[in-house]
Length: 417
Image (cartoon, rainbow, N blue to C red; front, side, top):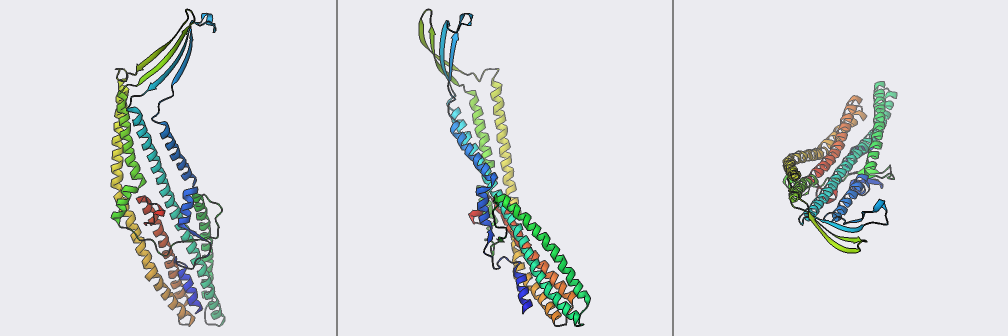
């Protein structure tokens, strides 16, 4: 009965529905912390705020220019000017230019927002994949620790049988060597756990997490949506796809602004003039326009239009390529998730229980004197490998789902997948 209990503990350490300690780490909590505290996210938030602030600056007139002149001063004598002038000038762009600039600024802000969303979904994926690796290292450590307990029990049986003359010294040596191997493996797993925990804390930008807290995955992953539904969501929601569309729109706005280069700008102003000899005071009105269509300057506008057209074609080609690659990427990632999910189900429902049953039969035979230790060890190693593979499959499933969420552009908080 004692060995059956040890075996049940050994098996279910590898499954994510075991009894959970009070202090736990959960992926949704870490994702929320990362999105609020990660320095890169904070930097992108500041970038978006700066872009929005720039929108308030664009589309407004430039400051007017105030000029004061003292002219015709004999011997550069400041107190004896022949003329004083005050001049206030304002440049007024052609009416269609300022709206075009405002439109470009709004598109730039939208691009910044999509860049931030892209960083957010990438950060969520990084947190999820690192968390899954930490969970696997933790589960593998638990499997090894329970295996050590089982080996100690087997070693006690082997020593008792050797002392009674019913077993060989080789059985004791085999178990001792296996126990040393497990001890070395456990040390390496603990090192991996410490490294992964440090990586996770760096992503979350937190240093006060409980180092003894245990990573917990849900009993079963959420339902996997169909490929077609994920594709339609990605087309409407994936930040890189939306950013490509905005790049196309930005190119068109640049082209519109370049076309406006053919239109002249207006310069208006007033001037106050004072001459002491003879005493004269008067006002003047000044008006002028730029000549962008002059033969020696029109080439600049034409080049700007050609450049903007090239940017539009480039953005359209990039957007078409991204759309074409999106379907293939989703097919691959969706297939990976389905394979991992099927493997996890097979491990949980068939492979692990069958391996446990085979090991239990060998253990019962050995205890009753009808079996050999080498058969027990072979069955034990098979069970240990199956448990590790089951835990690795569960971790890989979580990582594949995280990569699929990033490809679709879904946030973890959406809860769709």
